[in-house]
Image (cartoon, rainbow, N blue to C red; front, side):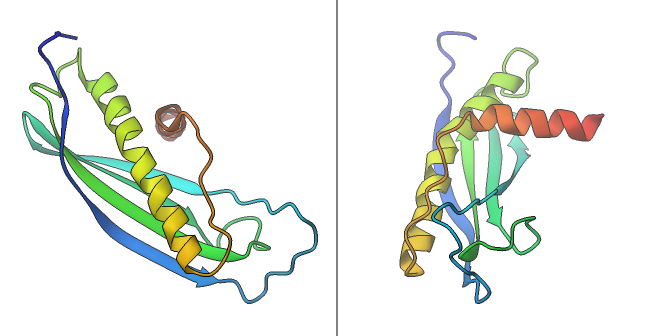
Length: 141
């Protein structure tokens, strides 16, 4: 990557928030198993600007319905990087922009749950880019 190439976060916005208490939730033990579902999408604005959208869902369709709440959070951000679609930059740009935006998503979900009058749920620290890359590889098989 060229030393003069600098990716810039231009703006970000909250696209969607959702929170619902699960009336069927029963605290059977102290460990609650929440398996969030993530999604990511890229949109080309022009050759130097792209939009990244990432979402997390903790939903009713989840295998484990014995969770205290259902929630969803989606955010999007516009990034600027000259020639971001070039073969040299494309993968690292997608991974870096995802890593930059993920803490915003983590914070938003924690705020939603805290305001729902349940203990705040914080997504674990993870290599989110690797998770998305693995999901995308599975879809292409």
